[in-house]
Figure 1 (spheres, chains in turn purple, green):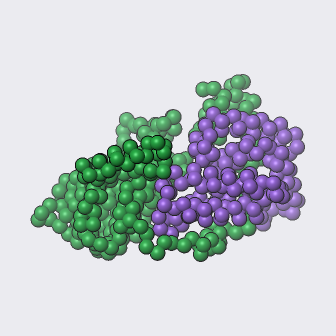
Figure 2 (cartoon, rainbow over the protein chains, first blue to last red):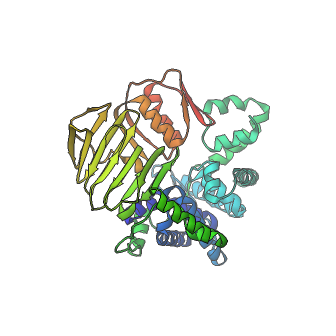
Figure 3 (cartoon, rainbow over the protein chains, first blue to last red):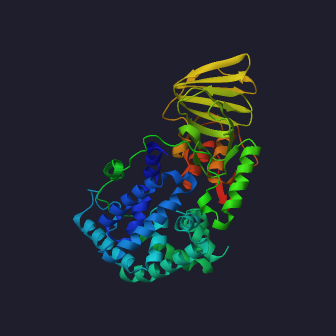
Length: 163
Length: 308
């Protein structure tokens, strides 16, 4: 595989791999570093790469690297709301409200068990279907369903109470 | 439909607003709908932070990705010896050698619906296969005779060397080190040349030369004159993007089916020309871009899409 083809793979998957690591680790600096490391490792295996299985390989490498880094992580979610910064026409009070809302949401996501958080966010943020998630995490669709079910239950209880 | 299935479909965006609205009055669903709406409202607009974008991340690692100086020629990716159980190795080698010597080394690459793959051919030629495509070739005399047989659609990056020949049911393409796309489905063969020159042969007496930026097609023996094409919008299937200008709609629908591994069900599928675009990365968007402009309503039902 040449570099141009590999760049195509990078362009297609860098963001979702970085997101996946962020969902796990809650530390964006670390997620970005490891995401780059994932692609360097994948490049070293380029002779074995087939396009149809490359995403599974990337997620596997990312998952393994994340385990090694997990202990030292300073975990704190900093998800933003999409229009938090862009809309200038809103009042300062509105922005404050939005920020407070995001902060509470981040706290709730932090408390969510890792397995459930990853599955939930891969669906909400990366727009992946259950079977796509199952494929990437090398688990069954039933397992995805179960984790999603757990995530929804947890969020339902905490979002209505706290936010 | 049970509740879990309903939740799954909703989370995957595979359910219409009308349907949710209708189910709201159903006491069995009203609660779960209210809960999901609360969760979606809270999480719909969240985005992860980032300190650098994709291009910057690539810049930072690009230097570390060193290419081999002379890539080794590769045989078809068929069997790897190190994956065999040790005890079977001797037997396997014997078997492989026998097969190798007794038969022409025919290699077949195929892609199923919903998948694209890239393969290396011997001597550094690369080929990208679109969904539902097969490519076969004989490696035994490859140095002298680089000939492949194609059915479907493929993009070739041919390394320098002797002539490279692509055979299809509608004609033959002969090239000398170049990049080109071949689309060969039903009774049609379309070839677009991106770099170098390509010779398109319909029969012994009918052949033309395509230069970079030119395309032509053969339909049941009839060959079109070469014409210029938009480099940005042709053979972009490798990036998952499909552009059409005045293409019979049923052919566009076929590509959609191949990309998403779905069946489109319709009583009245039109052949009216379609001009537009879809991507293979977002099903909801693709359906929106394809069907309403052609005055169809659509509904996803399991592995099919019903259009009316």
